[in-house]
Image 1 (cartoon, rainbow, N blue to C red):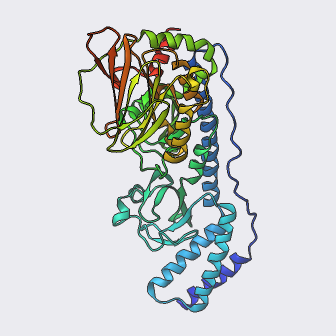
Image 2: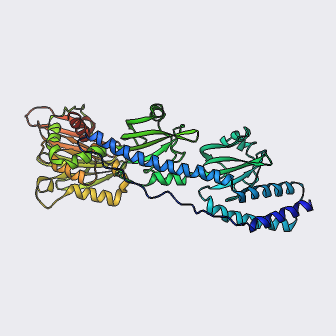
Image 3: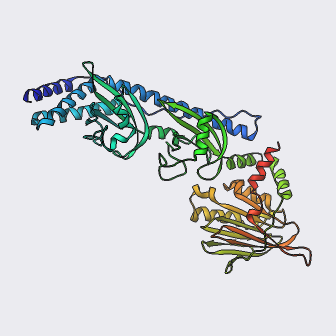
Amino acid sequence: MKSRAIGILVAVVLLLGASGVFLLWRRPGASDSPAAPPSGRSVREAAYEQLDAIRRVKRRQLGEYLDRIRKTAVELRDDPVLRKCFFLEQDFYTLRQGASAPSDAVAAMRQLRDHILVHCLQKYRMFYNILFVDPRGDVFSTVMRADYRGQNLRNGALGETSLGRRLRDMPARAFLDYEFSTVSRRPSAFFVEPVHRDGVLAGWFVLQCSINNINDIFVRDENLGRTGEVFLVNRDCQMLTDSRFQADSSILNLHLSPENIQSKFAEGQGHKIVTDYRGFRAMTSFEVCSVMGSEWLLVAKIDEAEVLTNEYARCREEFRPRLLAALREQNVRYSSPAEPPSGALLVDMDEFRKARASESLVTYGVGTCTAILIHLPGRFAYLAHAGSYDSLYGGGNQDLLRNMIKRICTYEIPPSRIRRLRVVLVAPHMDTIARAVDTLVEEGIFLTQIRFMRNPDASTADVRHDVNTGTTLVKWMSRQPGSPTTWQRDTDVPRVGDLMRETLARE
């Protein structure tokens, strides 16, 4: 034992004295901006061209990173410094199986590990950890972190992981796709690179990769608008990158619709309009990427509502009369008479009021005026009764609509929640709808968030809203004496964005 310890000590001294070229790791370069889509396309075609351009940029950036990490894994396997360290650590591990190692050998190994750590941080920083594993599956040493040190990867609980099952096959080399590591408590992928000694398998370098570098590529905002995002999904329909719209990490935690994801894997590449994981209609450009024996789905998407609203805002003078015509001609359904909630907070003309959950709001006699409701179902609602002195009528000092939005965005919700708001406009006339829609769009509301309730045969309307149910109920009083009143719910009328979609479809 003493002679073996002396041999290890001498080898460590020689290895520490060896000089090597250290390559500094660099993060992937600055992102590229996709080219603008050519003119002369339909709104949908232009949106897909933009998504395709963004997807291609991300695909190239991902490919460059994967090529770099593959080459680095091979460089590490053939690194003479690390190979010598592997054998020294293995001999030292064997030595300690029989008895306590001499203190001078322990001190020498400690010095060696400090040197190797610096070496690996300079050359192989893209790996989260480097494990030294023998043919039995024992992790006899680690470089970056001690997470796996002393564990056996082929037996017990770790033997049932993808890495454990693969090592039982005694692989020449392998790549294990991302899964959650119960040891390091993070999503991890692994490169397995063999180490031979005198022609015999001595074990493996197992290189643990975190998802951070890949995630960094995909979370950068590049011409994505307010609702666009690009992400990766694996065959198990788990997101491999963080969602732009969730505070907590979605990596391996957010499971997407199997029907949606599996059909995209089957098609390989293309475009689809889907209902996404947030419940919104989204335009998607997708591509299946082969990744070292695995397959990932790369998806670039944006809410259809944003595309429709942006087109309206861009060509407002063209679309406004067409949209107003569609609103005037819309087929309106009516509901059965309903008993409105009692104890509602009363909103008078030229004011707005707020109600919380379990409360309701009401305003009476909306005739030449306009009722404006902005609400987040189950949370709160703001109801305004705008008279002729409001800015919606082209003059006056009041601006109830903008004041409500300002208050909501200041005190009620963060900017990320604006997409969840619902807006209902109520009037027997068409006098204010154009200004109201334009104002809402300018304030960041999409057309699909807006409904316009109108009855040209009515003289006035009573408007009630129940915060808990998110239901708006309108009672229309007919212009004709003796004619019965009619009732309408907000869901009886289409959303303005749906009418905009139909308008574009007729082009």
